[in-house]
Amino acid sequence: MRDTHTDQPTGAAQADAPFVRRVFYIPGYDPTHPRRYRELYRREGAAQAAISGYGLDLAARKAKGPFGWRVTTRAAVAEIEVLVWSDIVKGSMDPSIIATYLQLCRTAWAYIGSGALLRLMRLRKGPMVAALYPIAMLLGQLGVAALAGWGAGALVAEVAPLAAWVVGGLVLWGVLHAFRRYDNRLLAYYLMHDYAYSAQAGGAYPPQLEERMVEFGRCIRDAMAGDHDEVLVVGHSSGAHLAVSILADLLRGGLPQHRPALGLLTLGQVVPMVSFLPGADRLRRDLHDLSARDDLTWIDVTAPGDGCAFALCDPVAVTGVSPPGKRWPLVVSAAFTQTLSPERWKDLRWKFFRLHFQYLCAFDRPGDYDYFQITAGPMTLSDRYKNRSPSASRIETPTSGYRSMA
Image (cartoon, rainbow, N blue to C red):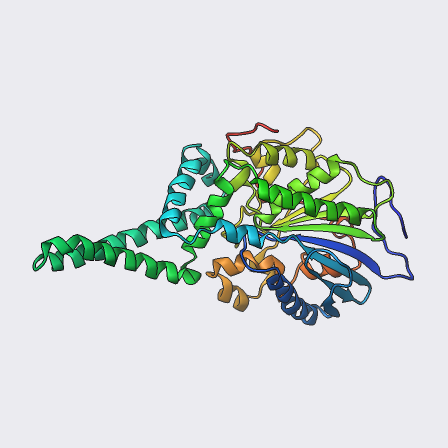
């Protein structure tokens, strides 16, 4: 292995060779195939390269393994792999209207009955509005459908009383189906499935997902024994807490003495939505353990403008599981109002779902956060942020009512 590392890896590439990185990207709850992220990287990477004045080329991966792509810049080469769990997400998204309303009841009780909802609202209002949106929208749809059914039944009752209930029921069902058909715009069913998936076992990972995480962890472990300058794990949205657990398992198993630098980048995280639930003992232990490690660098990037994330909330501290020697994460802001021009910010301000993906996109006024330089540039995550202070607006107050650890 070239430029091998011990104890405190630096990740510096040899002067006569390009910087080589393996990136393991973990998406959030998304039923679409990972090729979506490859095309997003291609489009936004080209835009950022044009803005910032560097070259960036994307091509198919040469190595076997999970879905991914290869990125080449002037002084670095990166192989990007994606944890594929879109099939699990699809399987969890029951298309049945009745099943979705049952999910609504179970999920609402999981958060309200446990007291997690009130505690989460003390952190950030934005993600809680996003969490309550599908509940309010689905109940609103049910109300509209019931009103339409009642009206239709009342009209029919004047001439055919016995048929009124049948007609009313058919109209109610038809209106609900119409709302379901256009959920690609409303996203009420999608978000309901998302929150229900996290809450179904009180915050514990479902067995099928655990198996996929173990498989992906093996890929990362193999990369740590390879000829690379850095291994970087990136988790976006709900993929952030998956990344935490995968790396915690990896590090508990021990790293090779000679190894690349190891980095964890969490983007737009929603960790408290899971770690505040009573059954999230495993995640709380992983947060506790990972935050004290000295053999990785963990940077957590969010932005107050992202209403779907727990912006600037230290996921370890607010969960109440900080160990005495806590080192991570370094909480920094992507500062959308500063890194996006006024025109661009005006265009995106109310596109909440799009803003939640801005971390993976180009900034027309980039600051020290550049997703494409981090994943494909010639500098480790540790070196890039070694002189960076944490955000002064970060939230660290322990808020969770559940702090037991597996």
